[in-house]
Length: 175
Image 1 (tube, rainbow, N blue to C red):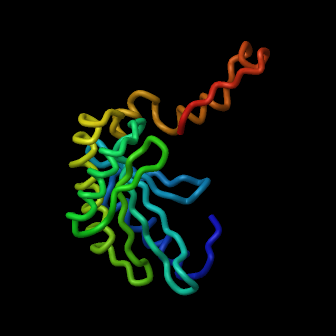
Image 2 (image 1 turned 120 degrees about the horizontal axis):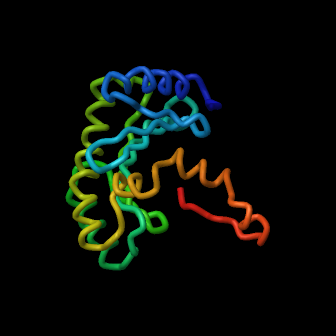
């Protein structure tokens, strides 16, 4: 992973050091340097990004619902929830709903990271089932169980059946 400056690199190292104390098996993606952990029926992504020339932001994102139909009613409901919660926000990207919150990384302590992770995880885990039941889609855990997880999806992309390559058809599996 390439770092924009020393503060981002130091923050990243601290996050990598702290996560195994909180979770049995945090996954670190070699491609983008993000960390992934499971909490209840949600998956959390933890990223360390530069924020200006001398600060880093630790963004914790809960994967709430995937494959839902984004309707005006759903977006309105999410905005109302955003207004009533004291931190973080729901967002919609494509057909997926996320909940995220960021904290500064320069002076990040284990307690501050754990508090932020627990807060995001609790909100995402509380709302994912409610959103999926009302608006459709799958929770992150259901999606992993159905698709076999990230590693299995990547393996399926790398091994294309002979008949598909002969006809020019390519299987596209969402990630």
